[in-house]
Structure formats: structure tokens, C-alpha cells
Image (cartoon, rainbow, N blue to C red; front, side, top):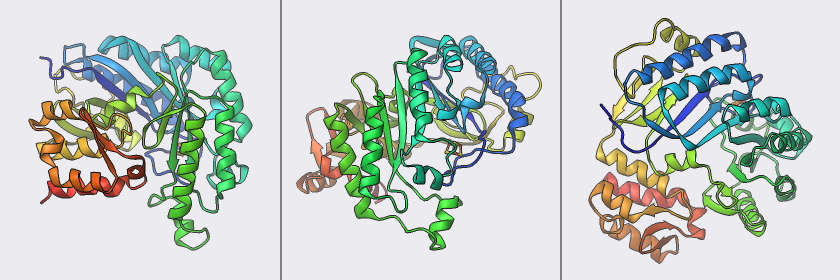
Amino acid sequence: MQLQSSPLSLYLHIPFCRSRCSYCAFNTYTDLAHLMPDYVKALCNEIKALAASGYKYEVHTVFVGGGTPSLLTPRQFEQIMENLRDAFALSPTCEISLEANPEDLAVAYLRSLRGLGFNRLSIGMQSANPEILRLFDRRHDVSAVANALDAARKAKFENVNLDVIFASPGESLADWAATVHTVLSFEPDHISMYGLELKGGTKLRLQVDAGALPPPDDDAFADMYEFASEALAGAGFQQYEISNWRRQGKECRHNLQYWRNLPYLGLGAGAHGFAGGCRYSTITAPQRYVDCLSGQPPRENHFPLTPAVAKVRLVETADDLYDTIMMGMRLTDEGINRSSFAHRFGQDFVAMFPDAVAKLAALGMLEVLADRVRLSPAGRLLSNSVIREFVSRLTE
Ligand code: SF4
């Protein structure tokens, strides 16, 4: 039986890294390289378990993230892609992205991946400043990013993203401006630009809490964000999400699926999924993930759940509203689409939140158009407060 009618997105998690970056709180491990071959087999078994639904669901984006997926070999990716193509109907224009660290991207490696169908790269550049890269415990310098871009173009990747982080401890506006100019000089197709978050348990958070590094500065954050927004717009990039800019037609379709609150499957250790009316997450520890997917893949149909799923929750309407607003408000151009919202929740967005919409529009934080409601440029800097206005009404 078909449980999902709209095209799906797939996220595959590869939880291995050579070393841990100082800001990173992702589910990744630096001492489990020996587990990689078994992990790939387990991932293929998890894909087979989804195929047991007996229905070949249409998939229009695949994102392999981590961790450091570029630690896998072309042969390992070949096995994964073969299983994906057996289990799902990958659309002819399927966006297939790989998250990668610059130091792994040689031309021959990238040509192999291109041959397997990968057509988008997301490269972790993070900064052009050598001191900041050292502070982040990154393993590369800026020349590795230049080489990676060059290799990507030679391997015929026409959609390349650079990830950068701003507002790190001690970073000046001039430091950040130099990074922005270097990013633009590399001529990527897409730029993801995130303010540093000091996540619990990270080395940077411990250093800031201990007073060894200065704490985040909100004014510097706002100045850097505004500087980069203007520089990227001046270079012809279109902003389409609070932290993301694209060249025409080069938006990340996979991430749009999340921001539009549309269904996706999460595979691999510590992945999250949203499909069939539930949100779920898988076992986080890679060894346990491997153990539970060894042996014969199950033949029963529990789509979208697999033996690796550890937690499941049915999505109630209130949760769905919350998620739709939280993520839709991040979309700086399309915002919350009023007709899709009305179709999903049976009421127009403006009619559902008349007071909050009127208040935020009067404050210049929100733009109310015939077909959408979105943050104004001023609202983007205060997006969390704007979103809270709506979310607080859900809990009244
Ligand atoms: S490479 Fe990425 S996933 Fe790995 S430790 Fe660094 S930031 Fe985290």
C-alpha cells in the first residue's frame, strides 16, 4: 500500500570523521574508522528494509551528510546507490548531494561520484582565516578549498555549495569581510552562511564558559550578517532562506523539502525522518546500528520505519502547525505559502493568526502578500522573536 503520495527526500548519515571540530555537536565519531565497511552494509540493509514496503516511492532529492561522507570510497558509494535505485524510483532530475571536507576532493574521486549520479557538492570551508580555521580545529587551509572547487569543476559538478561560519570568538568585521570576499572569488553556485552556535559539550563552548575565549557578541553578529547579505546580493546571489543564498536555479532542493515541511526519510545512525504521519529517529551509536541491521533484511512492511528506528512520535496537528511555521518563516522569499497552508490546515494563515500578523506587520517585521507571508528584511535579524509570536499563540 502506498503511504506517501508526494515525492520523498532521503537523508543518509555517515557518522565518521578524522577528528572533531571544536564547534561540532553532530552525531559523529573519530575512532570508528574500522566500522565503515560494516556500516555501509548496514545502511544498504536499511535501504532494503524500506524496499520491503513493496512500493517504489518516488524520490527527488538525496543528501549524504555527516560526519564526513567523503571518507567513503567510490565502491562504497556504488553499493549505496545501487541499493537506492533498487528500492526507490529516483526521479530523472533527482538532486544527489554529498557533504564533503575540502581535503578529500581529488578530481578522480569526484569523477567517480559524478559517474554514480552525484550532482551537488556541499563543501565545508568555514572560514578563509587561518587563525579561525585553527580555532575550529579544521584540518584544511583555504588553498585546499580552492583546489576542491577546481577539482569539482573539472569533474563537471555544476552545483557547488560552500559552508561558512561567522561571528566566531574574536573574529572582527574585517576578518569576516576577507572571508566573504574569498568565498565570492571562488564563484560557488550556493553559499550557506551560519552564525556560530556554541552547542553544549563542544570544545568551543567549554572554552567560552571557562573565560578562555570571548562570548558571542550580538551586535557583531548583526553587523556581519548585514555585511555579507549586501556583499552576496551585490555579487548577484539571491537569498532564499535566512542562512542560504543561491545562483539562479541552484537552490538546495533537499533543504527546501525540510523548510516546506514535506516528507523525508532519514537513514543511518542518528538520522531523523518525517513520513507517513510520524517523526522518528534512529539509533545513534554506529555499532548498535550495525548490530541491529546485520543478517537478512526484514520482509515485513513497516514503512517508513526500519529496525534501526529508536523513537517514533505521531505528528498531531498542533505539532505540524508549529513545524510549518518554524521552518516556513525561514524562507525569506517564498515564506509561508498561503494556499498550501490553507490546504494543509483548512484555514488561511492570516485568518488563523490575525493579531500576531497585524502586530508584526505594523512593526515592519512581516510582509503580508496575496499569496504568502514572509519576514521583512528587518524581521530576518529577529526571526526567532517573530516565530515566537506565532508559536506562543499555539500554546494559549
Ligand atoms: S568535519 Fe563536520 S561533522 Fe566532522 S567534526 Fe568537523 S564539523 Fe563535525
